[in-house]
Length: 88
Image 1 (cartoon, rainbow, N blue to C red):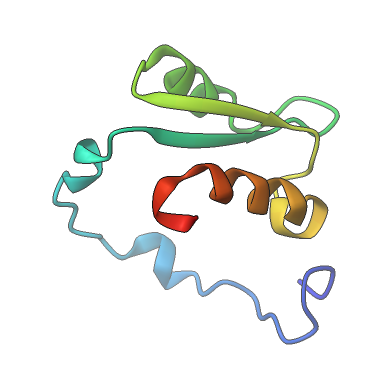
Image 2 (cartoon, rainbow, N blue to C red):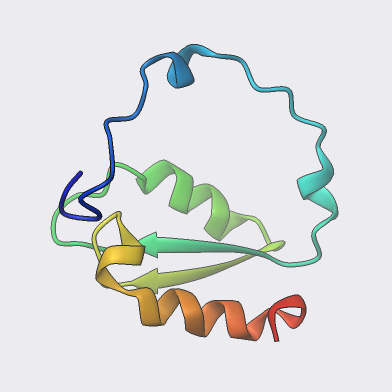
């Protein structure tokens, strides 16, 4: 992970195995944003992108970045955040 930050450490495997209780509150968010990183080649997120595209509650943004959009396109993240009323 040093490509992002020299202090970064590998993601603990247990976080992939630990159950996370969900409340469903995300459904109450009026407009949900999905940033689709469209780096060259087949995206491993194709199914997720398709679900977001099919859901009228999502605004899908296509960014020419790798999965790590904060490293490749911090300006895109900031631009999107500025469109959300609570971040103005």
